[in-house]
Length: 359
Figure (cartoon, rainbow, N blue to C red):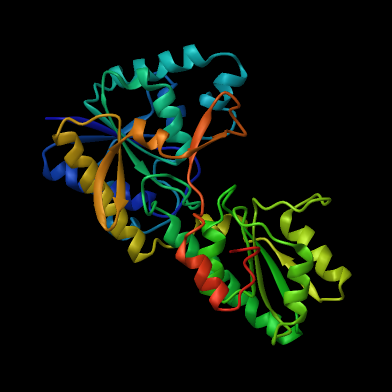
């Protein structure tokens, strides 16, 4: 009988509870035991490790749709990779993690995380040399290379779209524009997808250059006097400082365009998990369990052209563009961005949406 652990790390998103539930169900059918590690890597730093034996009754199927993580994703002030590096205790931290994995007598560990978590896992892979490490990609940013989708992205798009739908009603009532700031860090996928879904008049993302005067002109020439201007949090505006939505709003106000800013913030991480994210979570869970059976390690589940398979963590890291982590300067994360040939860019342009200086 195998002992497998599951851990959720980094930021939370919808779909985490679905993948936990599916891992537990699939592993139970295989006759394996599943241990849920609480609070991310923080739970491996206490003695004894903070782990609970998981069964389906602990997370009923009707609750698997809920956002957040049943296992939690860590808490402020705890010892983790970030604080360990800050305190000069990385070697001690890594030793604690490896010892905890041995204490739990794990045969395999399924790590559900974003590009930062997976980049960290590969950079500190000696921690996992005594266990099969299988990673599952999740993030609302959709900024991970070698996979067409990540758990949580579709639900975040739905949440942001619904938020804009409600704003559109009050925008129409008051002949007003709303500048909505989307999450996504340095990647514009969330803003691009939700902007098109919501019928935004302008979509500004970090990957595409734009001219703020062109934005103003586009709004003035619009057939509507209300609507959504979608702004990704990663954009910058030369000569201006502050939150991106505020910067764009100030330009509009100076031009006499009535507007308000709106910050959906963490509701983008919430919401009942969409059907597509539940299906993806189930497929990734099944792929991860198959990888354990096949004695794979240091791999990530990935969706490519509707096929789910594993890729090596080394390929994952090499497959992205490197960016220094803002919280862990010593770490270079592997990132993916909106590609110049992304068909949604052309769709936006053809629909009369100002997308920036595109082609």
